[in-house]
Every structure is written in C-alpha cells, then in structure tokens.
Image (cartoon, rainbow, N blue to C red):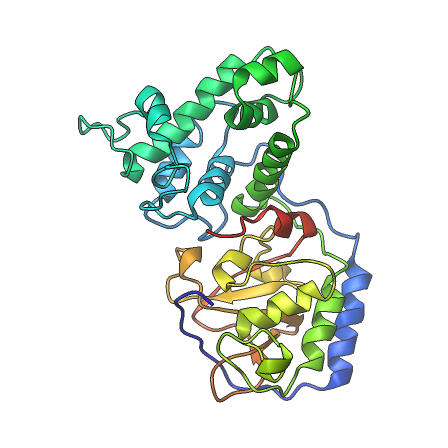
Length: 333
C-alpha cells in the first residue's frame, strides 16, 4: 500500500463449497460477454483521473480526432503518475514530463494567464494534448492508424514514422504504442460489458488458501514474513500465481484493466476502497471479489485474511485484471 490506511469490515462465515461454486462460475461465464471499451468512447472511468485534473483531460482530450480523453489520461499516468512536481533523470518535468527544450517549442498557455509554466498542470496538460495533435498533423498521410503513428512519432520522432511508412521497427517505439493503447482501456469508461478472464479462478483459489493468515503491513507472503500479507500484497501474489504481475500498491493495481460496474462484478475482479471516491490515487484498500457481494481480503493489523462485504460506503470501484493491462503499467509512478 502507498501512504494508506487499511480498514476492515465484519467477517463473513462463508463455506469452502460456496467459494468453489463461485470459482466454477468464472468459467461458465467466460466468453459469454461482449468486448470492453467500445470504439470512439471518450468517457473517463470513475475516479481514474484525479478530480483536480479531470475537466482538463476531458476538455483537451478532445482537441483533435487523433486523441481522446482516455488516451491523454493514459499518457499522463504513464509519464508522471499524476505527480505535477516529478523530475526524471532526463530532466523531464512536471505532470506531462516535458523536457525544457521541447517545452520551449511546444508548451502553450493553457489557462490564459499570460505564462507558459511547465510545472502548472493547467498549462502542461493542454500542452501535452496540443503536442499530440501537432504530431498527428505531421503523420496524417502515413499509412496505418493515425493515433498509433502519432504515438510512434511522440516516441521516435515524426521523421522516422514518415520514412518507415508507419510505426517503425523499433522495439521501444512499438512497446510504447502498445502500452499507451492498452492503458487507454483502463482510463476509458466501458460502453459495454467487459470480458471475464480465465486467470480469475486461479487467483481466487490462491487467496482462498490464505484464509485465516494473520495480516502483516507490507507483507508479501515471503518465508521471512511468515507467509503473511497486507491487502495489495495478497492481490499481487494471487495474480502472480497465475502469471500476471501487478504493481505492489493498490492505487496502481486499479489501472490493470477495464472497470466493470458494480452490477457487472465477476469472481476474480479486484475491488477497491477509498475515502475519496473521485480519485484513484487515494485508494487505500483492495480485495478479490468472490461473488455474492463478498471479497477475500487482508483487512488490517490484528485481523486475518477473511471474507468481507464489498458494499460499504467507501467502495470505490473494480478492475477486471488483464495480462496486457498489467504489463502496460509503469514500474514506478
């Protein structure tokens, strides 16, 4: 967990047979739902963008047809994790991670106060969108998807995209394009039901085996920790057991896939809790949904891994973890 406070709820005495029925149910529903984020969607998932920046991302994410708010949000999250004060080792600055020389050429006065401030999200977020749209104009006649080509130009330069006739055969550039397009699905509000994953049952089975294990703040389940976990340590280990590597902290795990609505939850979905229901960066607790309104979670110091209800006032939302979604997450934000 990252600078967070863990809460728990009342334990629920659910039996093993109930859990196994839920696990089987994951496979019964697999393949019966439609795809996730629909083409052309520009809505933002609940709380995915901090409330302070959401209006900017929504407005400027529609600046041109090559971008949308979810794509712009994915770029900003990947670059800075919404930190307006971060500085990279390459001296990229602020929430949009502009290098000063690039800012000098492409930074704009987004809020009309007469200044172009690289540190001010009110300037930096509009500048990121504006720069994307400039690049899209440079590559508009290149074969292929304009947004993919724009992202490739952002990473490798427009000249390389033009001469290659599309996304160039540069591994870093190809990975960058795939990463942003995958993260885009996490930041977009789904316009239809999202597909279940077959890894979900294995993740539940892992968590089920840990029922009754005492909680440990910062616990990753290692031998020197007595096999104990905290909330995000448990969810990370459960999905790692089925080949999906999640970030360590709960508020980053929220971005590991699309976000089903409460009435669309399936066993294996991660469920999140926060005291600020407008900002995913404030998430402080996570569990694994098992069905019937319950999750398996590691609630707090002094408690054990157990079943708890998800329908509490601090319920934030859910994530249907995907392998690609997890792989796209930055290693540090």
